[in-house]
Amino acid sequence: MSSIYIHIPFCTSKCPYCDFFSQVGSQLQIDEYVKLLILNIEILGSQKSPILPLQTIFFGGGTPSLLAPKQIETILDHLERTYGFAGDLEITLEGNPGTVDAESLSGFRQAGINRLSLGIQSLNEQNLQFLGRIHSVTQAHESVAAARSAGFENLSLDLMFALPGQNISALGEEISALLNLAPEHISLYGLSFEEGTNFYTRLQGGTITPCDENLYADQYQLLDEKLKIAGYEHYEISNFALAESRCRHNQVYWQREDCLAIGAGAHSFINHGWGERWHIPANLQNYGESLLQGNDPAELLETYDQKGAMKEFVYLALRMSDGIDPEEFKLRFNLPVQQVFSAELDQIKKFLISPSTSGHDRFNIKGWLLYDHLISHFL
Ligand code: SF4
Image 1 (cartoon, rainbow, N blue to C red):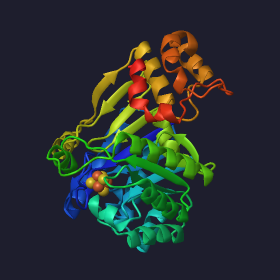
Image 2: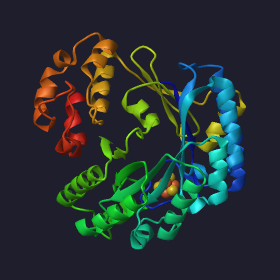
Image 3: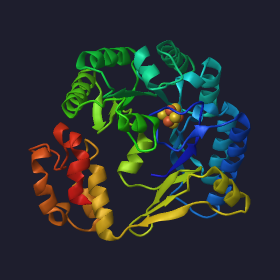
Image 4: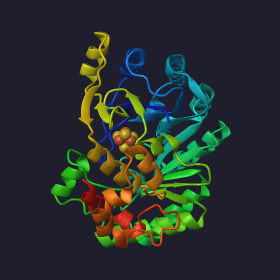
């Protein structure tokens, strides 16, 4: 698989829970940034070569839908000329319902975007206000309708849960409203309080009360049950898809495949040796200066040895319902996974689906709920 991620670090306003690298940007800043992205493609194209052609492209952020369709088209033209496009290329764009309309969505579709991920987050007006979102429930509905009219047949919607004061029945209503929109893909986000965010400060000051652990678990299980009944495959801890609608780009991360990246704050992974992780520092000024001097702004973050690569392969695989493929492990590392990690797998066995019909070890729902704790055995 050969993929590229493009980070767009601009938003209309900063949501109080968000710790992604994004800031409020002017039109001028966005226009200048698009020029830098083109330069980044040219410099990267002259230095690193993934296995070509590109099979997935992902515009993430931030709010990529702040770019004009023409700018998306220009970036895609440069990517095609540099790397070539596979026939079944998946091109995702993350959009904020408050920044799109029928015209822009139609323009994105014509520019080549074939998978749209809309940050709906909630279909409850009070929750949207609490989350500091710039869109209303009506706009969420309108953006989905406009996306369908524009020809998007692969639509992903985000839903946040574990919101303060949100009980099981309120979440049930949100799930029903979401299912009425019939997206092909759903991504879940349990509200967390990350250092440096407005919500973190409020949490420290005692003016916000997080959802308790038991309610979080009940909500997660409710989502699992309701979405499965509605025909969705719970294929990754936080992701659900109808048949043939998994996000191919995100699977590249979980399967430890090559993914290049451009844009300030973006991360890439290259299968050199046992693997290398690179990042472009999250600093717009340095990003521009580096590129204008003709330099690749990416910096090496981590080089893996065989043991590190094997551990990462296993704990990333455990994010997915496919679990650990013993044949793929053997192919990559020339060792049987059961032999390398027999003690670790034994320690987590009560959280694995048993008996495993496929021979793939994979977490049950309780294992996914405790994922961060359980993978410490592989760190
Ligand atoms: S729109 Fe998304 S990326 Fe931007 S501030 Fe809100 S949560 Fe963060």
